[in-house]
View 1 (tube, rainbow, N blue to C red):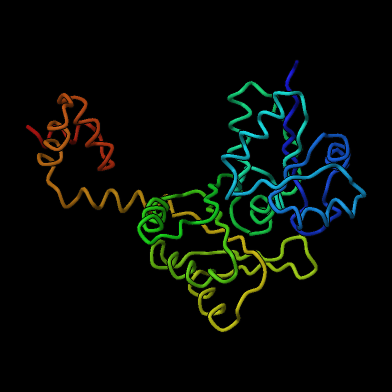
View 2: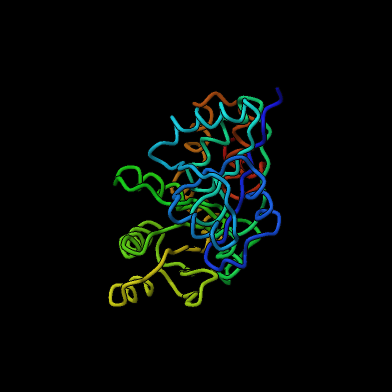
Length: 279
């Protein structure tokens, strides 16, 4: 028997009209719908007169339930995976099921649609050409510090999800780690009270300390200035003599020619200048 197909179905992030006709049809035709929160999803299914059986699949049961659902797929059943809002598997436990299905040779396909990260990016007023998605930052102090440290020199636009009750603390952490940059705080996307607050991180902290936010938030943060980073990198090497700089690379196993090339690149000068300094 051929396995069934796993359909990863994007659902509205706010406005129900953002669902696609293909998703509605598929949710009606599959054998089973796996939903992050069945109570929340039932509102969507009822609105579109969908009566397909539904089962829960969330972060607390994602490993055991993934095995159960994979077995159903291997038996030939078709399953649609939906999250509370947006695209399954993106900052979502559906990732585990999609991986398991692919590992077992089960056909997996995506029915695209609403995604909070891309929606906020388009609204942000910041550069959209290159970006990185961080999802929710880690909650433990050590892991969060590591994640934020890795973002300090990130030149792409950064996208972060955050719950309203953690927003101020996260903004403070961003300010401490990244400095005061441009940021767009996007809330209640596609809903009646959708807001996009284009400001700086410092001003966002001051505002939300006195105006508690409501609704899930997407933070879109300007990346680090690549020109400034390059200048800081060059300045760092100015504090080291050229012979010391050469020795740094030679001690790592580079030959003299490779080391001169690396030193010249670091210092923004020609190889000939490095050669003359080493004579």
